[in-house]
Length: 359
Ligand code: PMP
Image (cartoon, rainbow, N blue to C red):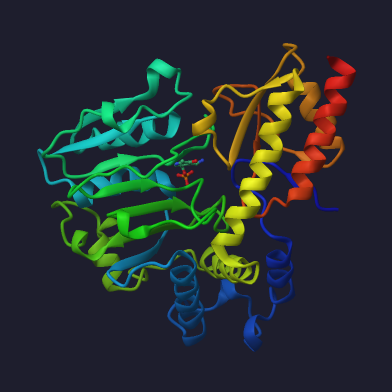
């Protein structure tokens, strides 16, 4: 029995993707082996890898002057790889601090560069995005980094910052592929796979070509974007199964109508849940309405101490992983691409029933 899994990541994957992977698990493309057992340098895998990239490029309309890298190490490793590649020693880098993940990103960057916190959402309790006009950027910064969607806080940028000639760098881990994105606005986009792309263990980097070849001395080759790009992300053995599965997810997305269709679906899912929360009188979401995440919806209950019961009863109804992040408590429902509207409707149904019994 499949449940509606509201986890923030690793997250729910589309059932047709899992079924396809299962059907070819033990004998992939007539090889008599699983895709996990074939050489990453063999013709069949190289073609699969190439196709995955091509489909991703098509979905996101990635311009020709961008390279797509399929890497290991999670988004967290990119917190270091980015300053190692883009900030020369002694450089200043701009970071917008909007929550837990931007804090981690700027903490790592501080080991390699001087971090200028161009804006800090502290005054709003990290429940809103500081208006761009209030940011204090360093005109000489090597890049401007931000986190379009804060997975824990459920706070999302309603705009793409205008970084001028400074490369814009975005941690799109929890928002990539949820709607169309104008890639040309960015110098570099990165995302851990385990939300909207596929299994954990894979990280996508989409980087403008002119930013390759700037890695500082001492950067490990596997973190040097130019070296990795030159080898087609196969400088060493890539996470082959995750890459293959990401390709299946990209095919699924295309079959579902691409990112414009995802945008319509995701908007409806998020609006359904927020509308219910706001009207319920029992649940609340603390985020400024203009900055509410479509992907991660944190909410609190009006009566303290009921969180565990809520999560347990929900799980019995097949609605799982609704506990908030351990650092903030409360509840959180993540609504990535693979979560259907029916899952959100089932959640709202459970929530209203729970409120009726406990309100
Ligand atoms: N950035 C964001 C926005 C995230 O949500 C996460 C993981 N939840 C990370 C970075 C860290 O990703 P990873 O575990 O792949 O290193």
